[in-house]
Image (tube, rainbow, N blue to C red; front, side, top):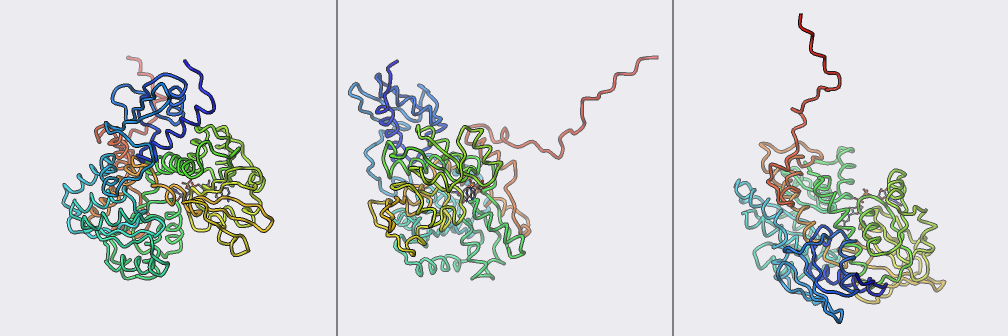
Length: 497
Ligand SMILES: NC(=O)c1ccc[n+]([C@@H]2O[C@H](COP(=O)([O-])OP(=O)(O)OC[C@H]3O[C@@H](n4cnc5c(N)ncnc54)[C@H](O)[C@@H]3O)[C@@H](O)[C@H]2O)c1
């Protein structure tokens, strides 16, 4: 077996970066074949395996050929893939995503068979890219009256135009000013959705503040994210929440895959896309070791990058240590880390004063994604200067002459500087969203106001369909009728006579 060098490893990682940029498909959990000899081919096999892909000669999802000169070509699901980074048109990208979202589309088909979505108004507030377009179009084709809203930073105008052309009204524009953005959000609410599918609970909260009458009429909402569910729980505890909400985020089929695998993987690859391979960083600090931080840390390690973790919660900090990561205080670790990634989803995680203490030239990125998770705006108000370097890359310079590089506008880097979570991950999350929509539509009366979850049975069914198992095999056992008696103390049979 040929030896591979550091240069071969960097080349192999760059091939995976190009592959993900071209396809938006998950490499972990996929099958691959690398045809060819030599050290590059061997380094590529190693890279696939380190990222959790499985070798398979029989119809692998990814087939690479590496020729004797070390040049690579890739075929995905029978189609040759351009690894040059050229972006395809919106309709092509939506059609591509459709092909890799069988779990969502089959869930919508099952719902359509019930006839329940016909004519129902469903408002979707999500990052507007091809996967969201697939969800919107599938529900639209099932007969629902679907509308879509998105934040300007999270809007792909070409995808918005493609959706409008296919008959789905879209309230979003990449160029919207803050005032226009707010007006679009209110216009979206004034279209009176019966079900609100939200991401970050921004529209649910806006509706409570600005359109209380609509909230009373809502059949319910479904919330996609950890930070959104967190805010809704506070509202419920304070008696402010006025609608049933399904916490889709809390479904196992969502959090176990979206936050850990999908966000971890897509954030690491969005960062590689922006700063290049190999990363200039010596050590990376990952702040927060929830599912997102855990995923980010694992995929950085798969890319041969040393990781240090900082965490406030001792239980999660201990988990990081058992996973083999050094645990440190944020304030200490930022002084030497070449790359700093906030994975907390908590405002003020890297405040302006901490940015000023980062190592000169450090790269700072966000995997969580709440406003002011990294204090760039306050640093600017206090005199730092922000200059654009290239798309998604800015330099923040301080008076003492040192500077840090900010990626993706300090928003969730996989979203602001990439195409979000991989297609096959959103396929699971959106199938869980469809289960939530079904739960709201199927209930004989409006569900009680409060936070609900999708049923364990529906949750398991999402993963079962993804595995190609019959849905019944994935159904959770019915714990209420399960046997509870212990078998440890079985009585000896009574002796006869
Ligand atoms: N970028 C994306 O596509 C994407 C996808 C899913 C979730 N998210 C977001 O990512 C964020 C994290 O998600 P999660 O599921 O891991 O959340 P989580 O709440 O389970 O984990 C966050 C962790 O950060 C720790 N933490 C909080 N503040 C800290 C600080 N100042 N220093 C160190 N540690 C700190 C917490 O103790 C917690 O363990 C959420 O806001 C979520 O909405 C982003």
